Length: 123
Length: 397
Image (tube, rainbow over all chains, first blue to last red; front, side, top):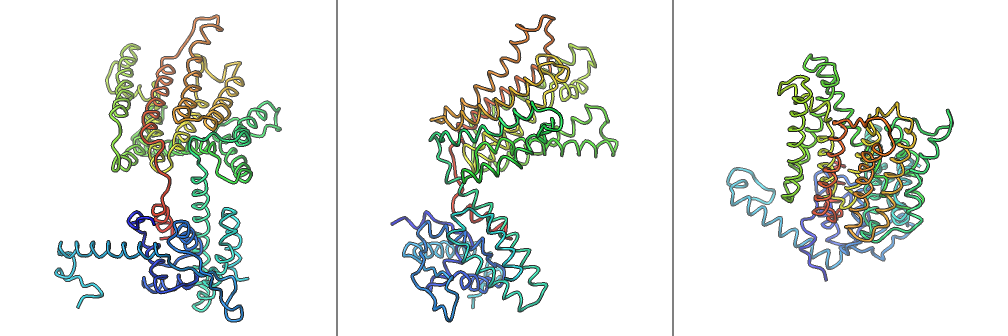
């Protein structure tokens, strides 16, 4: 299996797409909705950007298309579902660790917390 | 179908066939979902969605084609003869239509329109036929890049004239173009050098080109006794030795920038710019070009050289050195002929303009410089996943 480190750093869009898939398979529109919500409406993925990223993620084996198909009665049969691969999950974890280290570095530099800048998770 | 879907349906036709085949249905569905969301908010939201979808479609279609083009760039594997034939097609087209009388001429004489016509007519046809961006299409792109800087320089000169800073004579006009070239070099070089140190030879060559031209201009000025003053000599440098050195360095800088991302393709951008300059030369064999009876032959030679010989040789070359020679040898030969032919065929005393000589030497030096840079950067980098995605994101805002 490929070394997850070689895919880092991820771009914000790729990171958010992988995060959206981290708790199960989803179709493109659902991914977009989750990313939009997670970023406070700051990142709205258009069809070209989303499926361009999905194509590259599939090519790099970070995600695969799921066999799951919706019931045509309740949803559009053209919807395609995607899910994380083991490699994709490892890459996502590695990127998350990298970001945590960056934040820790910023804290050591007193850019956060001590200087009055509160993070969402701060008490 | 909603307006947003209709727009995206049209935009999807711009994407590569394979991408359409794999994702068109899902992308259209995505556009429909976005339209439904926007409809719930109001008409203005739908209008904003349509604008963002146009931006998304146009930019990503271009990026997907670029990626396909990069993936199809098979390095030093020679192209098939079909591709070679197609590469030569635009040059042959221009050559043939130049011989047609009056209104039947497909292209105007001005090289600007000539290359523009190549872009408009030739590139999409060949692109459609071989299903990838044709390498030779960077020739007109390079020429257009050079021309844009030239036109911007003229605009700067006009501004200088209106403010009373620059004179309206040719020297004043040349300063604007020179300043624009310097601005482009200054903008590109820091970006270029941030990640990579150039070979010492590249710095030496660049220094020789600039310093050599200044020295020549000073001697030239004093020898001709036209002014005898240093500042006038430097002004004369820009008008007689020409802005060729700066134009060439600007193209080398531009090529280096491209080489970082697009590897060997960058050299074609340089050649595209140079080919424009060759066609734009006012003198040939020391004779004013427009008065010269062999003008058609001159243009034919340029056309064959840059739009047939160089692309075909590039496509058929089997090694990296072969590619470099495919560019350098035809250019070198052409300029050697420029100075040897008059000695053989013109009975009257040869009138080789010193400015022309300096200009040609500059161009040859510039090619050597490009070759040195090419040897360092030429095979590097295709767009990686992360870089490509970054571009997409920055374009999407």
